[in-house]
Image 1 (tube, helix red, strand yellow):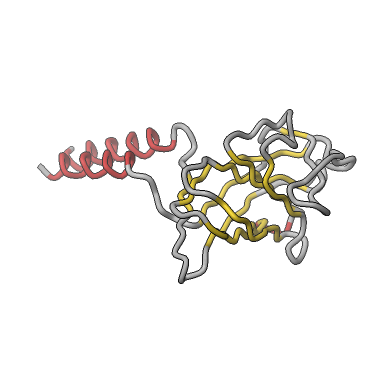
Image 2 (cartoon, helix red, strand yellow; image 1 turned 45 degrees about the vertical axis):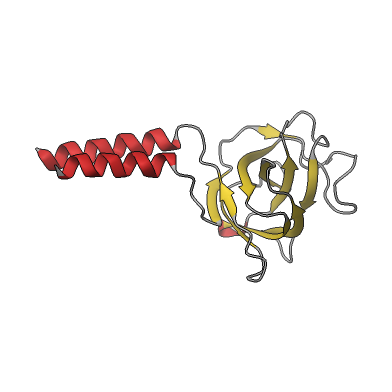
Length: 179
């Protein structure tokens, strides 16, 4: 009987969006792209970087529940030189200036990248973490917030397969408990 409740709970957890405002990832071994240059106008405009011509990146999908200003801070584990961008509606690493909303290099130091950005509910966004140069990559954590009076929440969308992995692990644990 207990195993059935565990399985039902895991199914509900896998199907319910997480309302966490922090997430983490790792750009090590990820696909590469030629990143835009973010210093200057936001959204970034040409040219593409002459230094970051094959930088590993990870694109994290998210939505917001309320339209307004959100603060993002990406911390590179170990202090590697990270670079971050937000794209609206779609992210195409071969069309770096299409749908780009904002980008930032160092905020305020190497290993920290972030910004305040006005976002709209009902839009799918992509937070792209990459490196300054081709050898800049590694683990990271992204913290997202809004002012307490505003109350906006960022919902990170799990990567494809994450819910299935959670469910499979839960089913295996339930079987072991029964045995």
